[in-house]
Image (cartoon, rainbow, N blue to C red; front, side, top):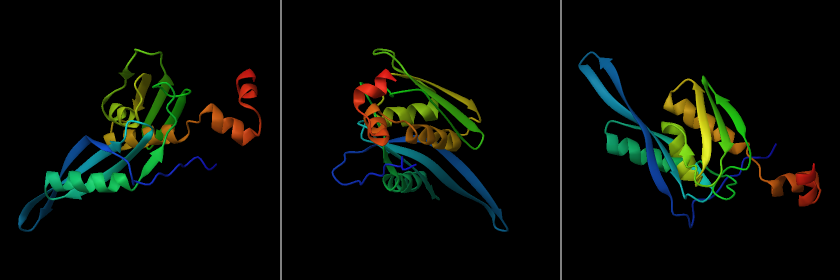
Length: 170
């Protein structure tokens, strides 16, 4: 299935959101060495989103590395009238997520890591639930798996070789 919709970073105004920072300690003969890992989500709030992981000995450096990594992993997601076109379940590791469309005015009903991804992609109204592991890395990756499998009616009609009206009839 060729649902991976890669996007180039040229001519995009991307906004970055920090999802989580993790402090890691390495114990050596000379003492403890601290380093930081940051998971960052970037998006243009119009259907393009990406995530990245940055690791460094300072927080600001880790965040900037995460942003650069996120810009290399951009995908295009169909957003129709500020919500997702249909319900979607996805998993990654121990995290499992559920995303459903909602009517206008509902807002993004999602927790932490999922909220950052959904707002970065430009979703204004949706219902989302994260089950299983609450590890931000796995929740972000599970949310990306769900968004990758979302299809709009136009792409379904093109894949099946039928008209758009037949997709809705059934």
